[in-house]
Image (cartoon, rainbow, N blue to C red):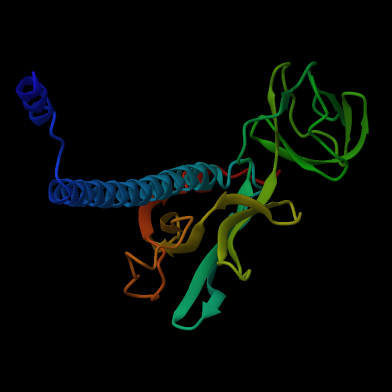
Amino acid sequence: MLNAIKKGRKGRNGFTLVELMVALGISSLLLTSIYTVFISQEKTYAVQDQVADTQQTLRVSTALLIKEMRMAGYGAPAATNVVNVTDAAVVFQEGNRQVNADSITLIGCVRAAPTRLSADAKQGTGTITVSDASSFAVGDNIVIGGIENVVINAIAGNQLTLNSNLQNSYLTNMNINLLRTVTYAIVIDDPPARPNPRLTRAENGGAAQPFVENIEDLQITPTTANQSSYTVTLTATTDREDRQNYVDPNFGDGFRRKTLSSNIKIRNLSIQNQGF
């Protein structure tokens, strides 16, 4: 009986202290390795996510700017300089980092027509009736059918009183466009945490409004003698700095940068309004 009890106890012997220490050591090494791989992958994912955001920012801002540049000149009076580029103003300087960005001013009906004629407009009349006048203000320069420029002197409901009589007749549903003066420029603030670069847009002399965040540089270069074509280059930065894993070779900071260049033809230069 006693021998059976002893044999049972021997069959239930546990791990020794040395075995437990070895097992814990191996487990610790495995957990450390797994944690290291996890942290590395998380950092890689975060960097890739920021770079993807930066590339998307570039694509969006370039597409929007190109769209309005291509419409420059449409509806503008003859002999108007519809594309004006200001070269390389210093918009930010800190240590080794200096940003010299261009700005550009466009004149034309760069957006879709906000309304149409709701009734025929006869040559020689000084008023027109539109389907919706809510987009207009007194003093706005409007373009009727892409042909004739007039200025709004008064608004009564959907009836617009013009500064001069019409030189042509126009049918119902003819587009009424708003002639705009649009300026794109780079603004970089310098708060304590980090610079805050952005592309701004100002319309018709109004205050510049943030247009696309994290755009750091804008360069515009004419590619033809008559300045009918341009190369536009935008530079975007990541939203956060990563000094531990990356140093920009030119600026010495931890922001990753992407650059995108596009060629644009100002296709409306030859069809600006002639004398209206």
